[in-house]
Image 1 (cartoon, rainbow, N blue to C red):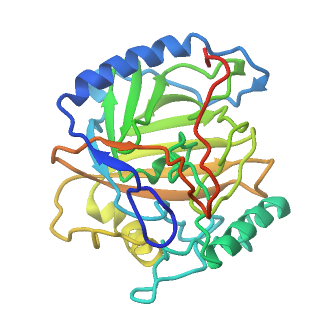
Image 2: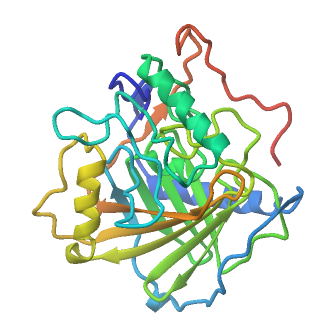
Image 3: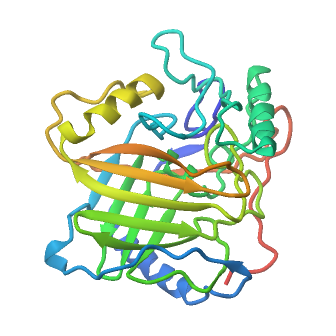
Length: 327
């Protein structure tokens, strides 16, 4: 987390320690429920999720607990077909993505011309040694799917919702279960997320991600999005054999600061398949995958402190402010 460029991480992050995550999460879930009642006030039409079938508690797969992916970037491109923007700059030691120089492949055919130009300009800044602002290095809320940059996520499976706690900057995401999107969605930092189970798979459908904000991007390379962004995630518990090809692709593409996936890991993996579409920014829907491993250790809380003192080549950082409450 922290600064994107120059290999610097965890700028302004403090280790605070967590005494009772479940109690905190319950409180946050209650607050999120109150906030949901305010939805349906703006003029952004919502896309509908697939047909939902309520599943009995006994049949719900247990995805609860802490999960960690450990990769930068975090999305693994598909074996074939349209996929995410990747880094043109590679590490000299192993050929994976160079986190110290973020030069997005602006020739990726998923990008509309204007979006390709945005990615190209960000890459030029990085090549010039400029750490360009992003949600993570300026401590702003992350839009989906930038939100998954966080190395660790705790999932709480409640009867009427899923709550996801992310390990950096107190980001909390609530997913309402077995409900449709409102007819008119109020744009928000993480968007309006609804979910349901399809057998052993949790499906999450998100629309209404706020665009009127600074540093709006879906990845480390500054890939932009519009109010038409629609993200579908499919979560499934998997054995190593089911994810070994994805792990191998990820090992070639993404940098893992802590090293490769432990070959002796014998627990379940959490596989997340993404389908992302945005007719305002992309030429076609595209896919990507993430692989999480269970982390049964106690994890620290990390607070991201806004840096208002001459960051990004003496440009003062913008600190989030609100002229009026969101709700």
